Length: 157
Image (cartoon, rainbow, N blue to C red; front, side, top):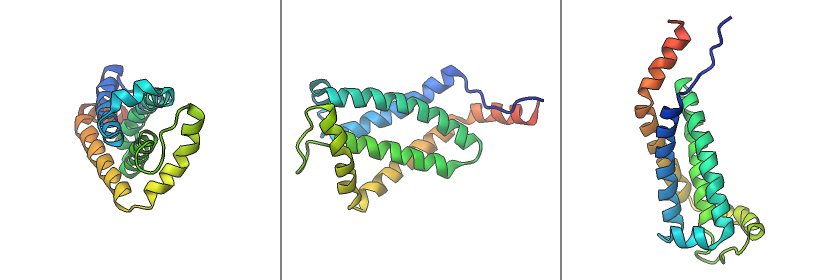
C-alpha cells in the first residue's frame, strides 16, 4: 500500500521559510518601534525568543504548505495569525505602561499580561488576521508547483 504522505522538497521549504522570516522581522520591527537590533542583542530573553520564533516559523511554514495543499486554509490562516500575534506580544514589552523585561523569567511572566492587554483592543487582532491572510495568500501563490506535485502524488501518477 502506497503512502499518501506529503513530502516537501527542502529547497522549496527554505524559500517559503524566507517569506515567513520576512513577515516575522516586519512584525518584530513594528513591535519594537524599529529598534529590533537594540532589543534583540541587548536582552537575552529577546534573543532567545527570536531564535525560538525562527524555529517555530520553520515548523509553521511546513504546516502551512501541508494544510493549504489539503484544503484546510482556514486552519492554516488561524495558526499563522496566532504566530504573528504572539511574536508581536513577545517583542512589544517595554513600550507603553509595561517595563521591558530584563531576564527570561520576567518575559515569561509578562507575555500573558501583554497578550490580554492587546486582546482588549479589537483592531490589533484584526490587523494580524489580515497579515496572516496576506502571508498565506502569498504562500498559496508561491506554493503552486509544490501543490501540483502533491496532486500528482495523491492521484498515483
